[in-house]
Image (cartoon, rainbow, N blue to C red; front, side):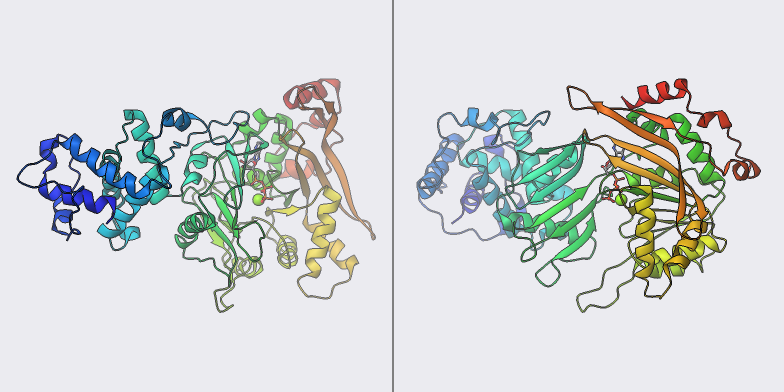
Length: 527
Ligand SMILES: Nc1ncnc2c1ncn2[C@@H]1O[C@H](COP(=O)(O)OP(=O)(O)OP(=O)(O)O)[C@@H](O)[C@H]1O
Ligand SMILES: [Mg+2]
């Protein structure tokens, strides 16, 4: 008989009203058949025992059963409860309520819930939250554990997140400074916080526990992960991007990577404040977006491409029809007239796949004023270039590459992935006339994200696509704390200034003069 069943037996014979404790067992539970009372668990109805004596008896019975694994209320548990399970890492506060009997408490509460609700997933959450609080009181009392009100509150919160939510993940998701969560199996968790990667002192109970949480995430968007589909992209309710890969593809157990975005998307003021770019660079980029230049944002993984794409897209005038195309909808545009399209992986039978390329082609029939593609990775590059060259100007996209020249080379390779035989000369010509600007983004060693170059595409010379740097970030060193020291520098005036002016976006040419003044102000922002 489980502990809770014994408590229910107690509930039948001894109303909670008498004990003055919160209602532990409601009518529904009383109606359920309880197992045969044991002598320890069921005092004779005629002579009700004092509540404390009853709880003690229950605890004793339970402790006897579990003594091999769970010593009841061991001396010094309170100190252990306060101590983190692993050494604290810089700046990370561990908010886990850890108690030697936590697993037992959780087991009892879960078991009781499963008995009460045939499908916990379908039950109203508010009701479950209240019920977990009640059950927690019952179990604590029965185990003879007395804890402070604030510990109890933390315990209940932890139980709620373990039983109904995302377990240890919830705690990480509550920290607004964590931007990336990397779970390499149940025991090995890393987070990126304020640009730096730390080992996080929280664990999942087992592979099974982690898989349960993964299931909760992917099933909420109608996907599933198992041996036959061991890689899945998903999203959390708050918009965070989730990637899951499980054995046999991963040798570490289930691996989960979560990219978080701040609730309020970063604005250009934020990026200038972070030292990602200068106000002059922002002014130039805004003019380019408004004057419908085609812009390619290039950078490595996690360098901030999507964030910059979001900020740049924010400058598209409100009266234009914007179509966004992404693998997982990450962009958060504020304009009114936005259509969001998301690609889809194939289903379990290997059918139904809709690629970014399919969506780009479809979007051309949707009367777009602007097409914003989250990232080009394959054959869609050809369709994007053709669209840009045939009147759909003002398009924006990103590509994984380490320099502006590299980004154009990547585009060339991706065009070949479209399966159309085109000589490289023809492809370069298309690139040279379609792309106007490359914004190169990087995550530097100190974790900061910078726009390290803004380069203008100045056409095709018959052999190569011509690129000219307009702004650059010049790194001059690293200070004692590991912070990167450097300056943003204007390099030369872009050729498009006249076109910008014709489009109503006048930019003062002096902005591009590499004067000491502009160097200094940019350097201060960057440092
Ligand atoms: N300029 C910035 N300054 C500080 N943090 C930033 C900046 N840009 C982005 N970030 C943060 O860095 C993380 C990665 O950003 P983002 O998703 O934009 O990068 P990405 O280059 O698109 O990554 P991926 O290659 O995985 O698509 C996010 O958590 C984001 O909040
Ligand atoms: Mg991205």
